[in-house]
Structures are given as structure tokens and as C-alpha cells.
Image 1 (cartoon, rainbow, N blue to C red):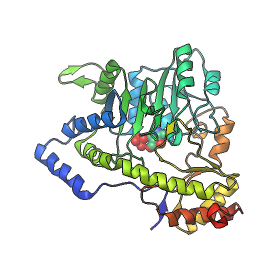
Image 2 (cartoon, protein in one colour):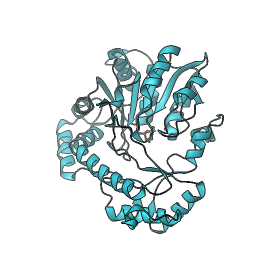
Image 3 (tube, rainbow, N blue to C red):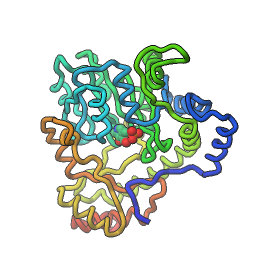
Image 4 (cartoon, rainbow, N blue to C red):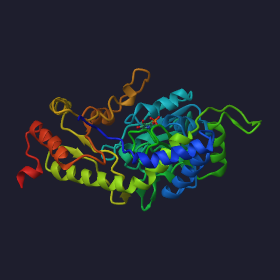
Length: 366
Ligand SMILES: Cc1ncc(COP(=O)(O)O)c(C=O)c1O
């Protein structure tokens, strides 16, 4: 069996089927059915959030956030993320302006953001890359000084805490993806969260064509979550702490083995409770990345170049150079990490990396 960058956690089928039977009994499969309402409440409780609005994917979640905040003109964003974060900006007729990233956290560097602010700036769309929180305080200070809104893309940050509380509570709106590759998933899905009740109401309206009952308020879209997707989320949630613990064990095994190699590993700040969503490694050179990929592929192991290309180099985007993001993007690989990866598989990956880097990995030295 090939070892992919991740393996989707699937709850026991019987647990899901029990929900499906109930959906059949209810005869209600979408449009705010009982399981989507229940999942919104469960997520609010699990993540300690004020308002949760489920959606059909994380890209729509970002677009709803941009619409709800009535953004226009320029939105300052990161070049180091998945294409969806910049696509949402462009799809909503705003102009992305790329600020470079911090080489340690891989998130937007607030000083670089400040340098990009113009009279046309309306917001900052920042990504908690790999689940490592942005400098939320510095970005909040900037937003306050310059009258900007903040949207966080927390597609990778489900369950992450800063100083003991959810990182999803920062900014005006936070968008999450519940795609099958994510730590918590509903096959396809996502959510938006915010603390302002009026904004939450606006997000709900936008998600369902702009109307409630027979009253039409304006333009909306179909961003709803079906009962089948919500049920999958409800099945996932009770298993999540175990999944995180399994990933933590695997993450720590990688760290232990790779610590003496000339690579940059993820730095988890001491005030952050991490979710172990990704295991990115920054190699000394693009050539080393290529060599590692080739040798791993021979063993049916497939890491991913998260994130390459940098978003300012996408064919439909024009952006000035962001040297730090471009440099890291050319040297980074996300190694396989999941609840199911074994120590032997991790050792196999690390032994290939150590061979390419010509440095024995830690376990070989003991
Ligand atoms: C950072 C980031 N933002 C947004 C998305 C889009 O989410 P979705 O696939 O649910 O639309 C993804 C991943 O797919 C992502 O990695």
C-alpha cells in the first residue's frame, strides 16, 4: 500500500450507518436538518466558540467571510498557502496583495503586512499555516490602527489553542475546511466562526441564497452542509482526541529521528497547544527535496510539496517577489503523517532522508 501524505480517519462504519438510518427515518437530508444543527452546537462546545456556521467547503467559507465583511479593493494575504486562500479573494473581485512570511512560523510577517497597507486595503487574510498560529496580537494591532478587517484561514488549525483558548476565536471571521485531508473532516465541508451575532446572521443568510423563509434580503449562494456530511462530522468528533494523540506520537517520533539532521522542523511555540496536523520539513536545497522525493517514490511513499508553488507565482496571479516564501516553498516537503502511520514507516522515511543528506539520523547513532 502506498504511503500518502495523509490518511483520512474514518469512524467505524456502524457508527455512521446509525446516523444514516436516522436520516432515512427523518426524511430530511439537507437545508438545516437536525444533524447539521447538532454539529454546529457540538463544534461550538468542542472549540469553545460563540457562533459556528457550517458550510459545504472551506473555499466557500472564505468567500462567505469576504462577502459578509463587504470587502473591496486590496486584501493583504500570504503567498505561502494552498491556492484556495488567494482564489477566494480573486473570486470575490478583490485584489490580493502579497506580504512575505516569517521564516520560523511560515505565517504572515506583521511588519511585511504593514509595509503593504495602502488607502485601498480593506482587510488582511492570514493563514495559520500548518496549524501554527499567526502573530494574532500584532495583526490585531495593525488592523485596529489602519481600520482593516481580519479573516483567518484556519483550514489547518482545527483544535489549536493559544494560551489555552481556541485560535479560531481571533479576527473578525475565521474560516475552516473540513475536507477529507483535514484533521477534522466531513468528507467535504467547512465552517465560518465569529463572535459578532449580527455577522453570524449575515453569514447564515449568505449561505442560503440570501433568504430566510419567504423573506429575501439580497444576494446569496448555496453554501449549505447536508445531513450526510454533518453526520460524518458527528461521528468524527468523539474520536478526535484519540486521533490527535496518535498523530502527536508519530510527530514526536519524526522529531526524535530528524533532530540531528540539517533540516528545519516545525517550531511549536510554548504557549500553543498544537493539533499535529502536518509534519513539514525544510531541506537545505531544492535538489535535496527532489532526491528525497525520488527515493521515497521508489518505496511507494508520497510526501507533498505543501506549499509549492508560492501563490504569487500562480499563473492567474501577479505578485511581486516574496523571497522568504519563495525560498521556503522551493525547499519544503510535508512528510506522511496520520493517525495510522507506524513507527517502522516513519523510520523508513527518515532513513531515506538521512541517506540523501548524508547524515545518520538519531536512531542510528544510539
Ligand atoms: C489553507 C487552506 N485554505 C483553504 C482550503 C480550502 O478548503 P476546501 O478544500 O474545503 O475548499 C484548503 C484546503 O483544501 C487549505 O489548505
